[in-house]
Image (cartoon, rainbow, N blue to C red):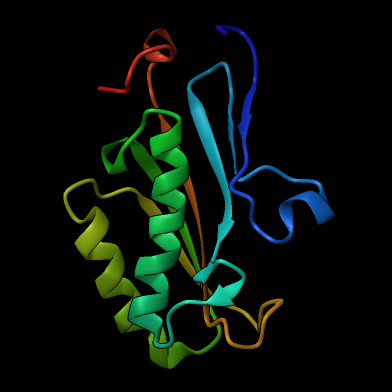
Length: 138
């Protein structure tokens, strides 16, 4: 598959309806993971900001795993939150998952998400050497 774009889905409720992929791997080694939330099986699976962040990052990391990548491949994260009071809890979740990796990161405060129960959404970008694309990402 060298030289082609790979796309994977996750059966998320909006992927088919809105026409997007959970993750897209580019020939240059970049992997872009769409916005992930704590919606699991059609329902918000976590309540507080820390738990929603851990769950959302878990969705993103599952997408990377499907492409043979791990947290160590993450080079950028974006965290969207609905209230400034949640900065520390979301930051704590990020540090626990990526503290050793130390990707470039942004945290932004937004008005809201498509489901009013959501307070956190995350995006992840990862990289692997294009020569390693066919392997397990090790």
